[in-house]
Length: 78
Image (cartoon, rainbow, N blue to C red):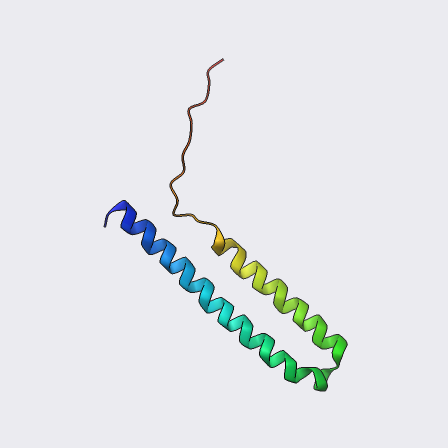
């Protein structure tokens, strides 16, 4: 597999996982709407915040493009 093909494969996997996680969290938020009456507005809001924090923690690292080549410059010798 060529370098560019490997980069594309990694990128595709990252993006697919992000989409799948977005769907999971969307379903969780949809279910939360029906739960509000049973647990109360405050507890539902607390749970919504926890879900949102979890989503951010799960997806943010995946948005980093690890497949991009790192371009470095040589350091200067004093």
